Length: 152
Image: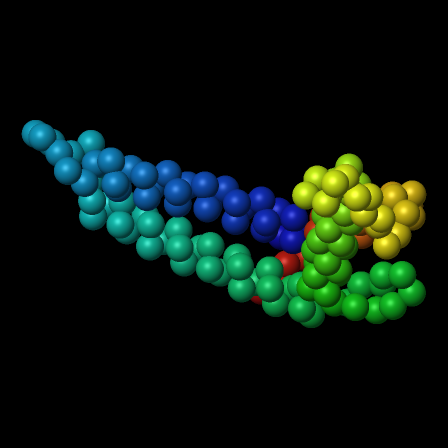
């Protein structure tokens, strides 16, 4: 099974688990006959939790053991995932700085102009570079997710 297939199956199982929790909650109290058996739902929930845990552990092991080439360096797939997250965080932070450019006027101080430490164009260029990097890293991750086998 490929990593991507395992991720999709884990998501499917998690969706089913959420439905089972809702069914358990909605059918716990009943008037004449419950819509669903508490014992059967509990059993299915426990089985789903075990399967999800197994997928999570196998995905973690695979991500830690699989070495990939990124920007001239060999890193684990787990580190690639962290790099993508960090890049997304930087983009979000810089976008917020750029969006706040209209708030450079401090209305409490007689419209005194506040100047940014860095010109908006530089922030915009940095966002573009980070976005390109994120796209490249995302594509690389997808490649490995759909070509590499999940470790048992």
